[in-house]
Image 1 (cartoon, rainbow, N blue to C red):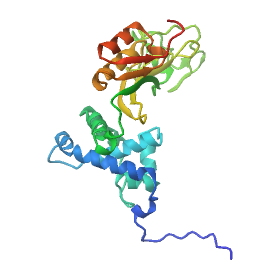
Image 2 (image 1 turned 90 degrees about the vertical axis):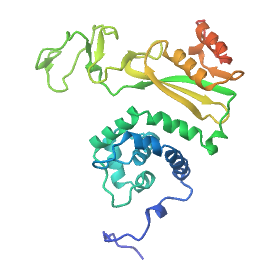
Image 3 (image 1 turned 60 degrees about the horizontal axis):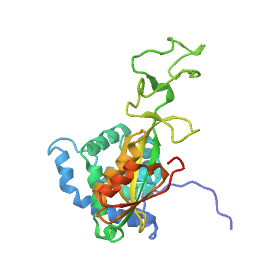
Image 4 (image 1 turned 180 degrees about the vertical axis):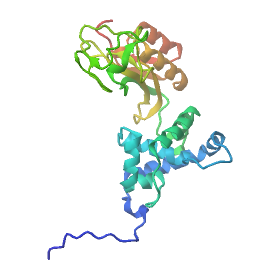
Length: 293
């Protein structure tokens, strides 16, 4: 018998949010680890907030929401709030009930910045690594380091001369009508980090990954992983420049790798300074040979 396509909404729901998440869903194991790490940070959270006043977004829920944003590549806080409004899986992971209202995106960003300014992100990462369930998976003998470019959320149009020159006339741009997002013709225009800067992301730098690649406004991310299970043991963000990969890798090696350990890296790390730095830390470098060396 064919069912009828009728829309009906019940006033009450008799299925708990916990029951709507599959028992074998990967987020269940992740949340168990995350909650254990957040319990360790309760005292650090208390130092960031006043005793009186209007309650803010609970830091535990805020961090869980940020993890979802990273796991599912939600590109903005506004879209994250939209997902939290209707995605039951997201609500369960963050700790919201079905009827709880979601937060304003601007308020969420302000609370997020408070946590990041308080170095909570670093402590949270360290707390997860120190959990017994995680620590037994980590190797203290063999590591790998690598870097990547993180494209900035800044338009190339925002990369203008620091002295204020070079702006197109008001109302026009390259012979076309201007406006809030007017077109620009960059043909023949020389732009360098020494003389130009982004107005929307001053920390972004114009950088190209390799020969023949286009230059982009970006930052540089750095990772250090242990080689037993490929888990990240250190992550850092720096300015994008030609030496940041190697100098930041040496800092991570000094902080995480003990004497007698090995460190693997690609050909971008095949320099005398990096190899010597690894040996000064008591580590044996395993670096792919560069054809330019």
